[in-house]
Image (tube, rainbow, N blue to C red):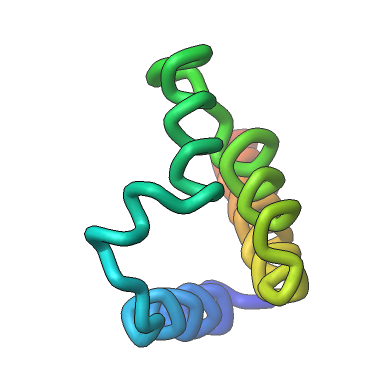
Length: 89
């Protein structure tokens, strides 16, 4: 997967998030938001996007599991690409 493909995948995921019909006032009280607040209280800024946030989101919203798994893989791919680039410097 090249950089352009990765950027396209991220743009598609961003579009899905923007298009979701979440009622933001109601969201503050839903189970997922409560779990995110627990993570924040426990780990503050040290929460892991992949291990804490995406895992919790995937468990609470199984209908989005495939998208979240793909997003996690994209993050891992980008991380490996950055490590390889840093090693060649």
